[in-house]
Structures are given as structure tokens and as C-alpha cells.
Length: 214
Ligand code: ADP
Ligand code: ZN
Image (cartoon, rainbow, N blue to C red):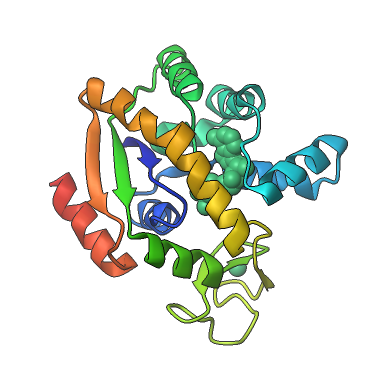
């Protein structure tokens, strides 16, 4: 299966990605994760990226598209199927992705759009905690770890992303509406658009996904 996950921040793309990894063994291509890896390296490029992410602004199309292209050229894991999470985010990225996939001969099966209510999105993002080591997602009230600040899965340290604060979340939502929402139409025109309700909690979401795939 080859899919693109679409939807605003906090709509549940990350949770769905977890399900797709566990149950359907898809490779996870998250441009957000790839960019955060670059920040960790402490390079000048990483510092530039960090400044943009912390503001809730987008990183340049050129840079992000190159990261994705490299994965399609060099990552053998993608043969088992892939999900793109957080890419494409602009009309230009969507067009460039079409070309990358055609060249790699790994065309998309469908794009999966998710949306959720704004107040739910805000609660999800402000309460979100992420494992520094394995990337597992937790939530202060919806899915607290067994031990405060510690990942249940690997014992890694949990942290809050610098962009998961109310002010930056507002900026990210604005960017989403301006730049990313229009590309839903790109996939509708290709007759590849499917939808899931992002208001669902993970277990129900997994069920809705299974029903959709039948
Ligand atoms: P979320 O979906 O929760 O907003 P991501 O981890 O996908 O989070 O992205 C975090 C940030 O990384 C974005 O706000 C943006 O600054 C940057 N980013 C991620 N993917 C892209 C992309 N495809 N194009 C431009 N910037 C991106
Ligand atoms: Zn962990």
C-alpha cells in the first residue's frame, strides 16, 4: 500500500501512521521527523530549520523535496509500501512528488484526508509528548505514560515539541489553510482522495481504516 496522509496538525496523522506501521508494515516518511533529525545534528542548516519550525513557518520546498527524493532513490525499505506524513504541504511539493513517484515507479494508491474539530486539535497538540529515542507519541491526559516523563516502549525521555504551544499552533493552522488545504483538490482530481474522521481516537480510527480498506 502506498499512501499520502493529509490533514491539519493534530488531525491524527501521527496516530494513524503508528497504526499503518504496526498493522500494515508501511515505511514511514515523515518530513517533520527528517527535519528534526537535521536539527539534532547541530549544523548551520539545522539551526535555520529550527528557527522556521519554532515559528510554525514552512521550510523551503527545495530542501524538503530533496529529502523526500533521496528517500525514494536510496531507501530499499519503501518497497514494502510507504506512507508520506507531512509531505506534500504545498502545490509545488504535490507536483514534484508526482514526478518523484513516476520516476521511482512507485505510484500512489490514494491520499487519505483527515480533519478534526479545532478545540480538539488544540488539546491534542498542547498535551502531546514525544519520545526522544523512538518517536512514540503520548498525551498528558488522553494517553499518559506509566511513569511520568518516560517512554513506555523504550524508556526514552519524553519531551514537548517547541512548536506545540498555543501561539505556534495558531501559526501552523494558518499555514495549513493557506498552503496545504488547497492540495486536497490535487488528489481529488486524480480520483485518489479518501477520507477518515480525525475526531476518532486511535482504536476507532484503526477500525475505520480497516473498514475503508475492505
Ligand atoms: P505537524 O503535522 O504536527 O504540524 P510535522 O512534524 O509534520 O508536524 O511538521 C513540523 C514542522 O516541520 C512544520 O510546521 C514545518 O515547519 C516543517 N515541515 C514539515 N514538513 C514540511 C514540508 N513538507 N514542507 C515544509 N515544511 C515542513
Ligand atoms: Zn520511546
